[in-house]
Amino acid sequence: MIELKDIRKSFGDKEILKGVSTTMEPGKVNLIIGASGSGKTVLMKCIVGLMGVDSGKVLYDNQDFTSMDDKEKKGIRQEIGMLFQGSALFDSMTVEQNVMFPLEMFGAGTHKEKKARVDECLERVQLKEAAKKYPAEISGGMKKRVGIARAIVLNPKYLFCDEPNSGLDPQTSLLIDKLITELTKEYNITTVINTHDMNTVMESGDHIVYMYQGQKQWEGSNKDIVFSKDQKLNDFIFASEFLREAKEMRQLEMFKDGKWRDQLKKEQDGK
Amino acid sequence: MEFKFFYHFGNFLLMLKGMFSRPENMKMYWKQFMQQCVDIGVGSFGIVFIISLFMGGVTTLQTAYQLVSPIIPKSTIAQVVRDTIILEFAPTLTSIVLAGVVGSKIASELGNMRISEQIDALEIMGINTKGYLIAPKILAAVLMIPVLVAIAGFLGIWGGKEAGELSGVLSGEQFMQGLRQEFKAYNVFFAMAKSYTFGFIIASVSAYYGYNVTGGALEIGKASTTAVVVSCVLVLFMDYALTAILL
Image (cartoon, rainbow over all chains, first blue to last red; front, side, top):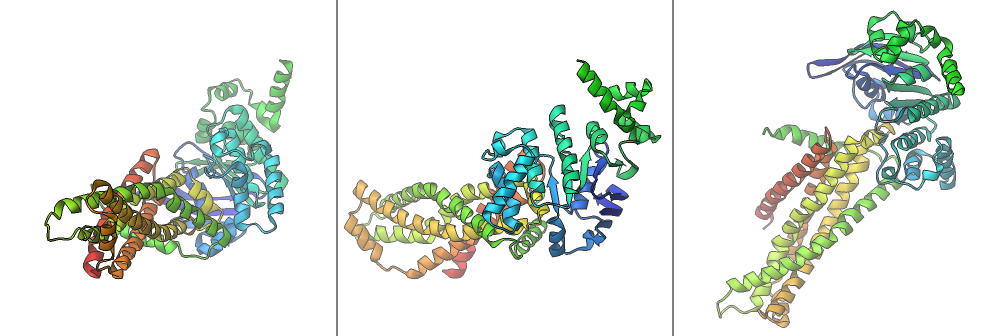
């Protein structure tokens, strides 16, 4: 479990995070959503320790990560997998070498065992055929999947994804969401996703934190987000014309318990 | 343009301090070190080869042009060429060229890794990025640049001999005779002392500018240019300082 207690962070005079407190639920997909500039990326960087906090605490299973020294932090970091916005694959390594890298650095066992684990992860993200390719030779969606494979290769307890859908087409985007959700359940990982993609919100958000101007504005699940009375949250999620019209047409009941998915499927089958 | 000397110097020292931690996996660090040795040493050999040959040839011809007195023996040309190359041209000129070749490569490689979040990815894995990315580069440069300087010295003198023979300025025998006149082994020590210092400057300064890039592709280019300029200035400054101290 990851707990955030009154996290504050400023850059110069500008206060980016104004006392954020929440709990990332274990074994679930936790989303941090919000408009650009709302502080969600800074919050994620503070949680994983890429940025220090000015005040407040980040607790991993009740251990205060913010007050740990570098050696103690290393222990926690080896339980973290992260998918970066731009995938952050190592250019000079093949797909296979990228996934192998954390295992070579930290993993125990023979080369054969490590290779088997890499194959297993690549198989899981359906990229075995691209194992010998370099990052420059594969598509954006494939890069994201390699990033996911690299993030899960050490069986992490926590998976962080920074805007996993950015730059992807809607279909690939859904595929990535599905993959992350499946892996979260499969490996019982605590996943934290930083996104402003409404598909991800509706598909994967077991627990959602809505950030507004550096503060937690709303917290809940994808089942109750569309019924929220919070005006700022409504302005954010109904920014899309399609969703606004749906709301006006009082069709929001569809969103309850995933009925909209059944509706969509019916329409697709009908075609 | 404001140049914050103490800010950069302090950060530079902190970067160097940050490199010293127990490697997470010695085998991986060794692999990285060997890769850097190949990149810096073998990768720069071609340019060092060409520069050294011509540097020696030109030095011979220009020295011969200036020593026109009939009372000065021809072998003195070789003596002057030898000392000029060992004392100055091989360590300094080679290092200036390497500041461009190796320095810009280190700065742009690290800058690109920073911008594309590869450094963050390594940090998240729990790897000391200063130790894993910067230390092997500095060690490789400190090991390989003196080797390149030594090679440049030999090639420069050989180029001088060939140029002397080809132009008819002096014969091979006269050149070899001049090479042996009043040879001081201390000069070689001096050249090596300079090349170790320059190797450290080139790799560490370039790594500092590359590692701390913020922004985008434009900033990588700027960092690369700054790294080369600052390295060259520091190489020249240390060249003067070491000459004043050691000679």
